[in-house]
Image (tube, rainbow, N blue to C red; front, side, top):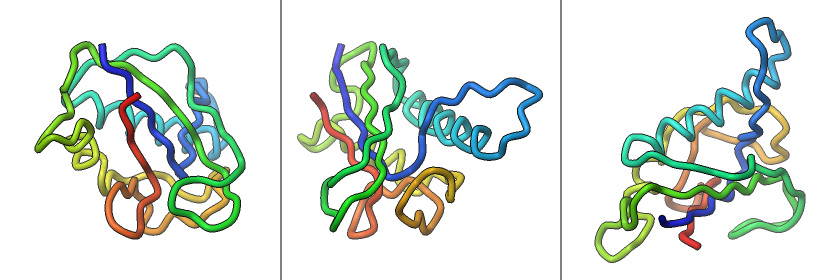
Length: 129
């Protein structure tokens, strides 16, 4: 099994709201996490042993401190996201511009409201570990 790590400025807290939940922050957080899981799931079934964790500090390619989320998961088979010698290329492509709910607990403006995995506007970074 291959193990991957995602670092993102998008609030992907797994809040597990109940059906009667009315807190828009919890609903938005879970919606973002679900979008992430569904996007990854287009290519592979995944497993994880801990939910995303929010941290405040410096992150890749950013000035100053910000709230960011770190999450790790495993795929059922190796090299599922590999293309052109890059072990995460397909996942980077799949996640780029997937819509998210912005203005939750994130400290940086998420504009456009989407996972951005490419270019200077990146808010999400993926690595194999």
